[in-house]
Length: 242
Ligand SMILES: [Ca+2]
Ligand SMILES: [Ca+2]
Image 1 (cartoon, rainbow, N blue to C red):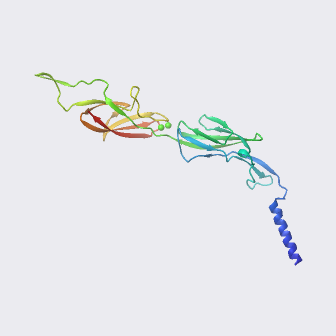
Image 2: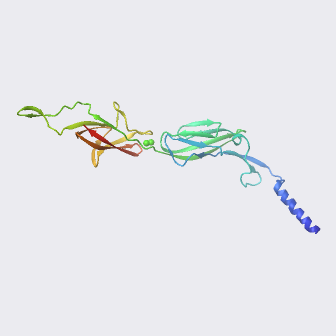
Image 3: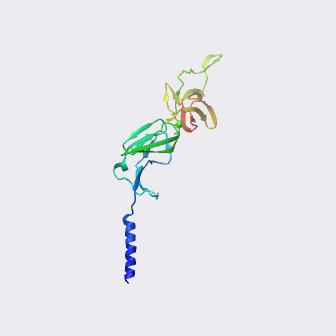
């Protein structure tokens, strides 16, 4: 019976020894830079939220590596500065792990985070972020041609007389012009193509188009624009011709 008790005591002692961490172990600190993005995909001009609060100082055993043993406590896990290079020429430093940045143009960028801890040690991490092109917006107005179009006359034995109905009206379709404003736009680039159509009939190209329409009818006119990254947008408006 005594042997059994002694054996149990030994086992308990070994168990307590393992639990209490009485083994002689030394630790060292490892500064780890890390960050996350707000969402999966990002558009130009959209604020992307970066979160570096996952950066930390880990305490690891010096004898063998079995993963993190703990994280240094305190504000921002012992990190005092966060330096961000967003890869588009923007470099910022902050005392907070949270920061937002908007990219002006689409593309793939390399974001570099460098953290500095309370002992002035530093660590960096680079991650790739893809920014998507923003589609253009199509819009247009119309007005009577700025050039006054006189009623077309015809010569007859009776003299000069107006051409009877139906008559045609010159309309100016305006997507973009200095005088009439910008009605189509691309927020992160510029429009490279304007195409006008009526049903399957192509009317022409350009930011301003002049057309003669038969009066007294309404025409669904479609404008399709293409931006400098190949993205398209269309709009169809009912153009009433009086
Ligand atoms: Ca665009
Ligand atoms: Ca673009």
